[in-house]
Length: 356
Ligand code: SF4
Image (tube, rainbow, N blue to C red; front, side, top):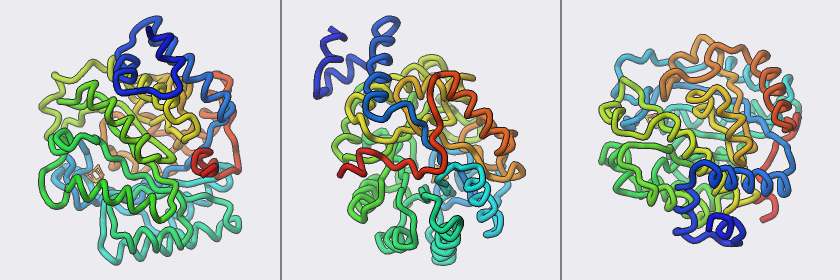
């Protein structure tokens, strides 16, 4: 039965659910098939995005997030402009090809103007050598357009849960956390022309296999260019931590994450998919396993070490103490050990997007 499903050109919801429920040998068949599809469509290349965690100041209070505005235990920081540029220069020198700027959500003009200037300064490095991905939350169409015109060309806005009911179980139900606004933002990003990425957490309280299958169908329907998915890791200083005993085990969350990546690789063979740091946090070989399940992007952290402890959306994040240079050679070896090759000095755009 699983073998037949794996031969199908188009997966219906029941097929997706059956694949997400596989275990043992059947799960291995799924992962092997996803790897074969990835290698045939995208080769064994891994793209890097040097991650710059710009600031943990956030106007939102997502119930799972360690840097939510309601968490008074966190020391707030913001990198200086020069620190951001230094990170980007390091990405260039290390041959990463692209940077990803991530921050807590702010939509005041001082912040959005600052980002525009930073994008322009990063574009000057190596005469436009670096691709720029932004992950700066919900903004107006005007701001998204301004940043796009300044030189950013990829944007990651995770939906976190495509089921509206579940969305409001992991976010406060108020105007700052409006599900429809989030959907509208994803549509706006797509219409502006960004390579748009989204994603979800896997193993959330109240989340069902039905929800996860619908998440994958949501990505396909939106025809996004990139997806980032990782296991949910409860943070002790957040409201959702009260359900930490009720969620699947770490092993089950990891396996479910691998199956989600693999099924999506079958559904959307040419998109970019991140092997999230969260996978390595729950499993020392997590990123390798995610790559072998179909992921093709890794985001090594470039944030100056002194700030990293303050950007813990979830606890015990992997590689927090590593220096960027160490991280680079470690990743290279890790990828070689699983017969994958990091593609240096390239933007690593989504093949699905480029073809469109
Ligand atoms: S998930 Fe993002 S938007 Fe939500 S509280 Fe954390 S940093 Fe802010």
